[in-house]
Length: 529
Image 1: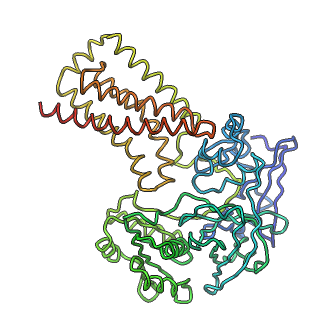
Image 2: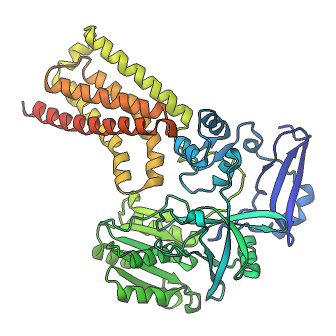
Image 3: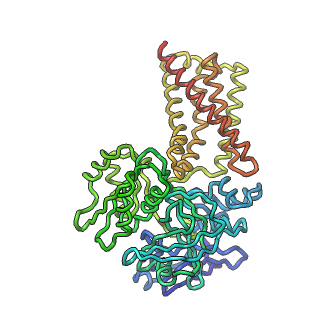
């Protein structure tokens, strides 16, 4: 990699590196990246400073930007792996607002950290000035900050678990961090965030030292998809430690003020009593609302959350959702216990926080989904394949080998079973959406599209003809469902065709339900005879 024309400028606040800037000597736009090994792992998502050994070795360190940052087409949304070119193409197609870009490409739909970058592309002013109206001491190193709700935010519908991105200018550098809302979703006067002061936390120290009534910050509208439905019939158990109490606090306050009937239990672990945050308020909420219970665990006196505690909660609250939030060690231990106890992964939600920046990691995450270009290609390919299947069936094209195989019971049973397995995987997306797992359903969407061609291929292996009566009903409903799904995949969300998309989506769901019902009937009939 040629770095001869790259300069490195590092913004420093109180001897701590905040945000280095990579600048080429050409007219390329500025890009920011993280210093190597400078990410913090604390709850607030703060940057840690360089270690002493790193500082002493700075003169010998080659400050090279990762290849992915210097790429001409950088990834803007890390969660959904959406590139800048994809967003530019969407804007050229008529998406001129952040909301439209998010609907079409999926960018900003998960954590919301890339919303400022989307706003830069659309030239929108999403940031709103919010004035602090109250600061409340919660613990020796914990405070709650309440900011007035800007007028343009007043009509939005909040959900428990959403985050508020706060921006402050520190040493001439704009720094923004996400904080979970701890105020109730019914509260319309203020947003509350509860922050723990970290020794090297840039934003948390700035808030503690500078924020007070009348002081202003910039905020984005609450966002994020790690939210919890208050009217879900399944119980919710929150295993939280230390400052990880924040999402559980927001959930309990929201459940109490909204009159929700969902059963919520909070198991709150802290090392000492002095570290408890809002423990008295949680106990009061539990005494006033029968659907809320809380157990505070002083680990130096009672020990950590153990397998026996998990077994008791599982027996008391079966078929529940689990929320884990705390330090990395706490999260790892809790997740391991749940896994050992046989809790299904889709029932476990882990709330983690990382610092936002414009840095792009060199390696994509293992959970990367299909890109919009891949979805479009898969959609067009599936449409062509469906048309080819119909044409060869109508023309009565013979496939001697497959005709002989399809006439045997064993072959039909195996390919039929394969179709059933693929259908079950396809219905996983609907299951996740019903469970209100927005982030997981978004990631499952790519798999849902990718399996479409496999379903068609298995249909062709099972039968190259349309069949008669019930078999034809199964085949036609499947083909209709695949065709409508291919259209939805080839043409992502866009404000220009949202109504048409809803109609096609309704047809897709109806055909999928009818086809699955016909398939089950067909399978039982074949087995019976």
